[in-house]
Image (cartoon, rainbow over all chains, first blue to last red; front, side, top):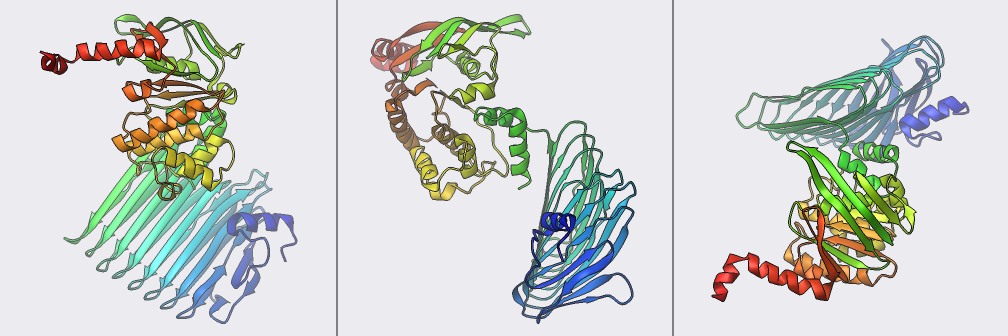
Length: 307
Length: 243
């Protein structure tokens, strides 16, 4: 396993994997399982009725990790996979997902990951997902992830999604429901270039007392690319939510940012902030006075912004 | 050595051509500490920007160590060892104080050096190293990080545009001491725009700019007493007390 250079590059880019990972893992390539390992506390088993896997993290599992990267290296692949995560009560685990597409052909390659998270009482998860595309072909590289998150009482979920390079088209759908005391921290980082298009729709329902959510979206749109953000936070109880969308626009790109907040309870406190703007001229000048060229300065500013 | 020869900077305003800088010639010697002062709107900040290359003169010549830098970019001037501290420094989302100082330095700066620069500007370094230089810092804090970023560079000529603005009294005392230390650093010339008596008292030479021209220039001992007299005359409150 991992002998092929393209496989290695993709796995490195999306999951920081350079060797076979420790702990539980499932590596999917071109629509088929390539390698899988369960551990005593984390069971990964293929679904019987449709493509995908069930990941069961047994109650009380702490400081363990699951890697579930997907790679697509053939042109013309249309891979749909259903992954269900059952994180039982009192767990504390790291889940590293991600999808890398290498398309050197002329046909479209697409991966649609449909992830459902059931996070048990007092359980904590950190979920990291990177999207990356490469390949010299003219075929489109498409990733359409759908994520459903059910958070039980006092659970905690930190979700970080990153798409920095090479994906031509993305439609991301995210839905979360939070019970009492649940806390969701979602960070989305996106950079589009060329003629890429990225849409992100999100609905966060805060259903229980003291549920809280923080949504942070940072994006950079270059060239002719287009981005649309539509995060919605709905407070159905005494809860708190903060939505922040911040974008840098460059060249002939287009960005729409539509944060929506709704309160259906007297004690819901929900805030949104949204900003779109080009790189500040004084920032560029400041870094040039350190001896950087304008291009170097731009790169440093974008890198910091998306850090 | 920095030489400005007949430098002018004109802009087109609503009432016609405005002479922001009008035929200014001056020299800053190696290792010299020069304070530029004068009324607001007199052209001081523009002069500093012309030296850094942020603005280009409409006529005249700027020489640095004999080399004509009049048409040179900001980046190339920075590479020659010219640095500039903004009057109102920009903020950077996602860039920490430590990262900014390292970018100024040109390579990763060791923690103890970062700390010593921050201490010099009155910031408790441990608290600040990993904070982002964004809107979470106050105006005075950003300003002090800006001054520290100049210290983190190896410069032949450091330009400061009103470094005292927005800095509290306690930190100001420390800042004056820091400038005294910088003054003693051999081969580094300092051009500092200021209205502060205590900063002027550190200067080797004071240049007064008004209406885009040099109104007066000379050693600290010559110019400083005259300026103090002028301030006295300008203040009605003090005049009344004299009566």
